[in-house]
Image (tube, rainbow over the protein chains, first blue to last red):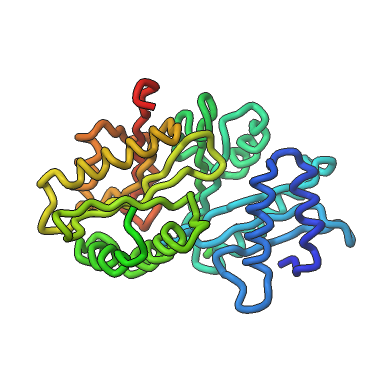
Length: 158
Length: 158
């Protein structure tokens, strides 16, 4: 887990991808503080980061979905724009899945958008065993659906 | 909107319906404090209550869904168990819809469960113009799906 000193690097990473607007970066900032602050940090918001040497290349935030039995939400996953497609995202996602499975997780849920600029995000999930489980038309705005991907974690990997 | 003095009555109401577990009542307690506390109260959590004389019969919590363009979430709606089926829920829901429409809302979203004990909740939404928009199998627990109802608010009523 990145410590609080990685805060600036994580926020810069999110901004750099161009896939998170100001509000979303602000929410990420709050979740980062909740998840990585002085103990007791909030176990609902866990962070994982991936580095190339000392340089932060990707980060993900996930946690158990309140009110569910062992369902986890993948709140954010981001890889530096210049480094996408080089395997860092896959390794980061696998690390999240491993962590969730170790915590007894049964299902991982990732929400994204139907917009064209999220095509690579949707393809990323599809290629890694996630299925589109639900879609709410026009949820984000007219013409912009909320698309929910889920992956069931195998009993054997838990 | 109920003021902070109605706090105990609202929480008792939620507990009395038997449809909210301890965790859910605790979340409602936090949302109530956020939405009805000393100004500036959080506009993301608005409350409406319905009374019979001086007695609280129902309450609802709703607010604009973060990251969306004019989509609103109906977080909770509850009517005292002994008074269900007598029109209070309908009037309360209409009041929520009116308030959302007045704020420019485009869509109301209500999430519920596929469990048998939520049958009356699902029937309540269906009978009032809501459609099942999405369902995630086994989301809450194995065999317990998350069912999302939406209602699009008419241009004319906004």
